[in-house]
Structure formats: C-alpha cells, structure tokens
Image (cartoon, rainbow, N blue to C red; front, side):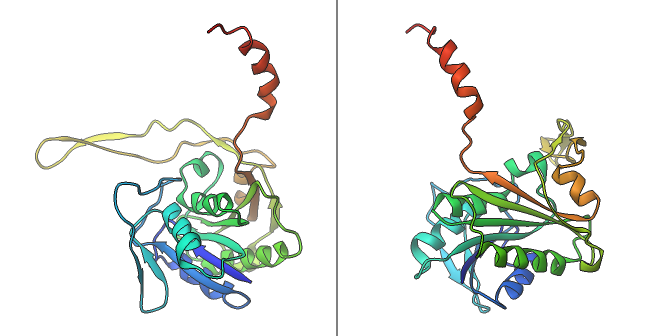
Length: 250
C-alpha cells in the first residue's frame, strides 16, 4: 500500500512524524507537507508564486505552499507510482463541526479526493496534545480496514481522537458534524506604533453537540469518524429551487 501523508501544521510538526512511523509499519509512505504552520488555510492554493519542494535529511519533502498545494504537487509531480491513499494529520487540535470548513488538514484530504484518491484526515482533540500515538494507532487501524471496504468516490473520512491514552478510548463512533455558536471574539489592539491590528480569539461555544455528533463522541472519549462529501450540492433544494427559478424573468 502506498500512502501520501501531509498536514497543515508543517513538515516539522510532531503529529505527522508519529503518524509517519505508525503507517510505515505496513505501508510505503511518502511525506509531503508545508514548510510552515498553515492552520486555517482551508483549500487555498498558491497561484501568484512558484512552488518549491525540498527533500530534508530525514526524507520528508517540504513545500513552500499550503496543504492543498502539497497534496496536489505530490500527486501530479513528485510521486511515481501514484499513492493508493492520501492521509492528512495528525493535526494539533480538533477539526470538529463547523471548524472543518477552515481546516487545512481536512483540505489536504479533500484535495486528494479531488485528484481521484480516497483520503482520511486525522486530528488529536485536546489542550496539550500529548497522545499522538493514540490517534496514530486508531488511524492506522481504520486505514487497514479501508483496504477491504473502500470509500465512496465522493467522500473523505474526518477522524478526531481524544487526547488520552489508548486504554482510555471508549471506542469508535460514526458521527455527523456538530455546530458551534457564532464566534464574536475578534479583538482589536494597538501595535507599538499606535496602529490598530486585529486578532481572532477563541472559537464559539458548542451549539449542536448532542448524541450522534462529533463533539459528543470525543467528549465521551470516543474516536469520532465522520464521512464528509466532497460534492457540496444541496440536492434536496434543487426541485424547489427549479420551481421558483422558472418565474425569474430575464
């Protein structure tokens, strides 16, 4: 099995190294990741500057671009033969609910899916991020299972693992995305020259975090596995929209 491994925390992040070691026990892993932390980069591409790939002493490949750039470049230019699977992570922090929209980790997996490959995003949920090995082992077991049960062509898996020892994990649950309250925590301060600057603050509190959600699962020490669709079309709205759109005049 050939795996392309990437992330959004950067090529030197501890989580990606732990996951590389665990996946390498049963797969041929190529690691291609951003040269810096790109958290919150979502699906952004580098279009106005050239991309450069540098192979580091440990064999990891560093790219001066985003997570999406890294995956796209690896598949289109750097890997021959192509990988069987794209894995993103282990992210330093959760990618739950609405956060997936901004996540560079999820975006790296999504780019793999856009390029025709099954993909999995893996995140560690906690404040201190100590137990990367827990997330690595759970991710590896899920990936092994995918060999016999491949993902549908329009989906990726978003895996979130509580930051606890493996022995404290209650199990694995298939979940849906929860939702947060609207965040209203952007702050304005002055820089040393008296100019106003702005910082994002903390995330909004959980709004929809009941049983069945990814929030509920990790709160109760379950690893959460959420299938995400790459096709964002709202199919349920198409018939209704077609009816009223027919009355729109040109």
